[in-house]
Image 1 (cartoon, rainbow, N blue to C red):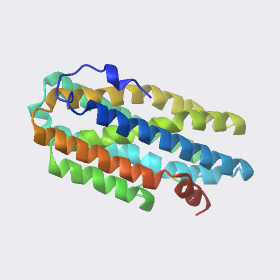
Image 2 (cartoon, helix red, strand yellow):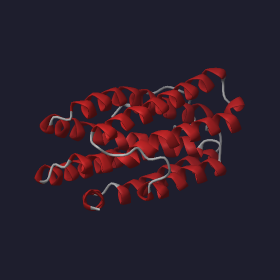
Image 3 (tube, rainbow, N blue to C red):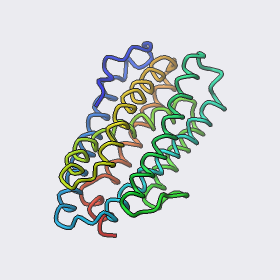
Length: 230
């Protein structure tokens, strides 16, 4: 997990940084445990198509981020500094690359790349878009929590991919891991720069807590193992 405690973007989060750090630490650990549980079960029956199915909602998250970030820029971007518009656009481009990359990984395992929201990703997607409707910073807070959460899956995925010889999956996710460090840091920087009022901070916390609660439901060891066998 990137050390967002060192990100400098302004003082807008100073009053809530401790709670934000607790939320982010908890979702990273939860995702790590869930991913390890998935691969412990996968080791007993290593079917590449099962791994492909596990990656499908992850592929959808990448393309949904593209849609979301572009709409964030369209609606609210001109209230940001030009450099932040540029950086958000850079993230959007990288998310599109990730959709292509994870798509290749899925296809290398014999699966199909999703072209619409997978059922297991719908609550997550609905919440992101609800946050965009609510407040200019809420969607940024929600995807920042979501992407930070996903970082907990990287190391267990690398180890499992190496065990099972899924070289393409490991190569792709190592590239994604590098990009995610930029994405997570950018989200925290933008939130710190533009949170000005108590209402802003309340909306940021609402979005972070909501995404944390979705991650706890989505990435528990039980739910991940259940998705594996579906």
